[in-house]
Amino acid sequence: MSDDAPDPELLDIAAELYGLPLADFTPERDARVKSLKGTPLAGPVKALKKPSTAAWVVNLLVRYETEQVEQVISVGALLREAQTGMDAAQLRELTKQRRQLTAAVTTRARGLAREHGLRVTEAVAAQAEATLTAAMIDPSAAQAVRSGLLVSALAATGVDAVDAAGSVATPEALGFEVPEVVPPPPEPLRAVPDLPDTEALDEAREALAEAESTLSGAEAQRDKALSAFKDVEAKSLQVKSEIEDVRRRLADLEASAVDVDDELTEAEEARDSAETAVSEAVAARDSAAAEVERLDG
Image (cartoon, rainbow, N blue to C red):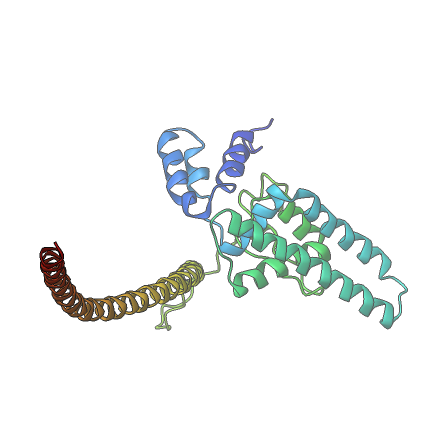
């Protein structure tokens, strides 16, 4: 390996970092830089950029659904070869098929991202699908997607070249030619409006996408909790209604008990009177029988 050749250990570290959950990338990269302090790898590892959400989703797809990604790229190569000599109708049909394939794979990518704890917004899904489309159209984009080291989404028009080298980590190590940046000649100092910080804007957009994803998840949890609350509330109202019915029935029974007690008292008095009358009648009979016996004897 020449002095200019990339250290394969850098590719190994990059592959590991870009395979982590998105939220773990920056702290894990910084920890690696700290552990590599004083070595030639510290600088290149520190320069590894956190992937955008769409790039992370595509990297995830490359790692866990390699066959589907290869199918997309293979179909793209076949379509490029087949386009020569085709009429407009055939080209339209091929374009339709290509879109159906990328849409299907993007749907799988969204499901895969959910399995790894991230809900993908429509905007991020559109960027991921555009990246897969670029891999079908442009060979350099296909190479970038295959690497699993994307840091930003790709887009291809079929006319302009895709900036594949600028969309991956360690482009030189992946075989991309990175044009040397020649500084422009100095110009006279003059007041110019502040230009937007592209990197800061990308990070802000990424933070917005993540915030939207978090909001969507929170809203889903809220809706689920609200539904559960309504179910329990309905059960509570039902139980309270049944308790009121029991209380009304108990009050009716208590009132009936009072009436029955009164009737019982009256019945006891009537019974006692009847028993007294019987006792008196028995005594009168016994007295009359004795008198008859005396007179007859």
